[in-house]
Image (cartoon, rainbow, N blue to C red):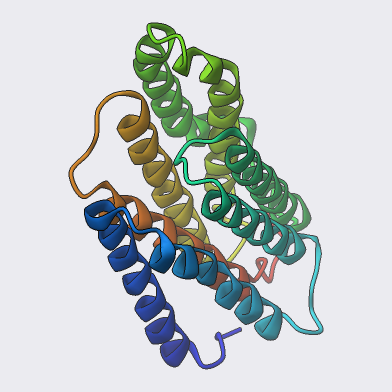
Length: 242
């Protein structure tokens, strides 16, 4: 199914995302949080409403799971607005719940498609996210473990990294179980989301990244847009494959 009002929606979404990036820049320069406090919670509601509008009357476990993931991400954004810390634990819990919902949704769409994903294909597709997440976690682990305050994040960040890995792996497992457009939208979205979290983690635990907010918010916003579009255009194969 082609998304309704696609171009107008994308233009409006890009305007909101660009304004939020500017608000992040304004906060970094002036330390005045009021503008960012208004813009930060405004990104997700548009995606949530757009997904509901396009999936009206044909919701299933897959689209409901993605919708739940978007809602939990919005909760994480709101928490960051109330408590301005890029890596506070309550905010992490919201995004963690979002990752779990995405993982379940992507896994469900694979199971219900009728396409038999072989164990070898599952193994091959899980290698890139597993390799990346493991290497990245142990990289920042050295910085967390050497700092008394940051060491409290060791276990939460490990669980968070596992949720990212599960989300990315299940997204890649969808190959052959949906349309090519839906597969590449959601797989690309998962990789953009992984990149966004990697930027945030490096900036928080290792060293500040110049214009971090531009790279972080851009990849985060694009990932959620791709999740939404990929869910709307999802279609299982017309013929069951064995």
